Image 1 (cartoon, helix red, strand yellow):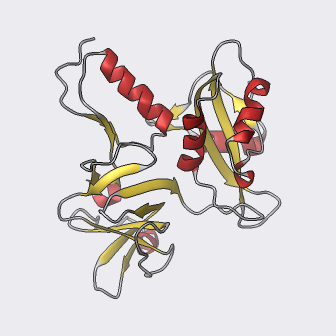
Image 2: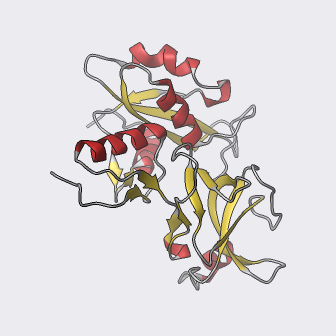
Length: 251
């Protein structure tokens, strides 16, 4: 199919790791589309898009661009009004005319939208990332997930380590983070891979371990025939349920 008529193409449903970005760009190129594939960031509570990919930085590593016009985005220490400086990891928060009035549930609204000391209504997204000096936002993971013994488990940076390593045999990969059943308030990662024909998990295990920090090492690596989706997003919730119920690989 000739897609040369397209002037822009991008993803905004979920974070794309560097491997997915390359695959999407190749798909466009193979179909005569000269547009640069980009990623944005937003949510329904903020009126859809919060950022635009209009920066000189290459798309990748969580770069989702700069705030939309009339939209203010800042990074706060999770659960607080303490605003953080540039290049410091924290919760991505937004305020502006696109911010929702609230949910049907007042308690849920009070948790998501907080009036800070500056008098503004700030939407606390629950997403973790940082802002560079030029205002570029980097969205890296959903919520804080500490591993027992130290280390913050962030899905996108972990996936990008594997994507950038170009490990032979891995066609696609994604992490799922679940609560640690043995340590309260801690989490553990599981890795899911789509393998090329002729490869097994044992063929990639050592190379996966070599490109990850100790605290990033997955509890287990599972091979899937393809990436599972639910409502256009990777079905991580379904994978968490399967891990907890012990039903992976069973029919």
